[in-house]
View (cartoon, rainbow, N blue to C red):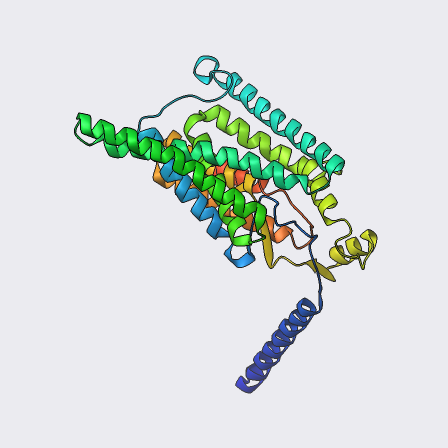
Length: 356
């Protein structure tokens, strides 16, 4: 050691130089890493395409829209019905678990039926399966929530005959308007390859579904559905026989020549020599629907906007963690991390808010 100030300055300069050299080396390694393109995703898949840096935007929109519709339906319009196949009010936790299992089993069966259709008729059949399924859902839910908003508006008007006539007229307009709107959306979906149109359709249907489930599903059923679908999502995406993985594999067949074998690619990813390109993301309609379902349920069940907001933040953090994992994985389930973080945050903040 030396007490000479010049020696100290020289030492500091050397340390700074070494640090800068290390930074440059790391930066060079980062830039030298090979970017691997993801498999091709057909434009008609029900996914929301967005830049990685903007991934919170569709989640925020879905959460806000679903939360508004859920609050308007449950609180303002007073539509308070219990969903599920078995009454949770009567059988409690057991009913919630059974309801969750039933919903997951129905989804699993539907997924394998879709895979069967794809293998028999080709990947193009998905366009019609997804289009008509989401079109039907979109029409029913658009009409329902539009009627809810109409009821809220007319409820505060004088109870006169002319008001009642106007209400009937508006109801018919909503019915035919909802049908026309969905027909136009389906026409666009089937006849164009616009990602803007697809993104709108996916986002719209997802927050409608999320709002509806958030309103009608009681606590234990909600938790069972979300946890059950998160576990199913892991199998569907990661397992060799998982339906989502099979769909992606079938869709990407013969679209591009693979320059690397699976073994070579795996080694490069593990060593850090290569990473998957995550500049563009595909967020599934189910992911957005369940995110908005959880936040809507948080608002309705706890009655706290703070709980809802913190739950939404936890979901976005979970999504960010999942996105980081996409650098070394071709595809990852979007539900597990986000949903478990969201549920944990909801329950914890609900408890804290209740004791304050």
